[in-house]
Image (cartoon, rainbow, N blue to C red; front, side, top):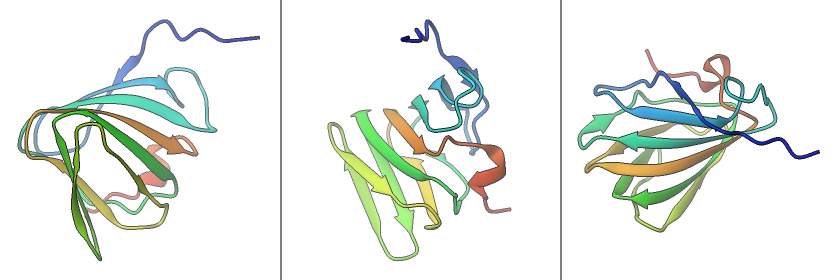
Length: 118
């Protein structure tokens, strides 16, 4: 039977500036551990601590630009582009301009498995 998700839950975000995370599917809003789907609304100049997560992350940029830094590369993901970052790869996300994007984590995001830098 289908399960309707009527509204997301706003969850706390890491980083140097306030960022809005609206979790639609995941451990908090739908009690789903298989994967998570969240809409991110991030201000210009936001930077998140680096992390080495135990999940794959699939990201689709709806508006703005998402900057991604790994140990081997840096790239800008533009509006209407997507990127995949594999689990156990160190990554740092930032937004040089106001940005809105969808993040899907497989398995679902959790604080215990994100492994952020100190």
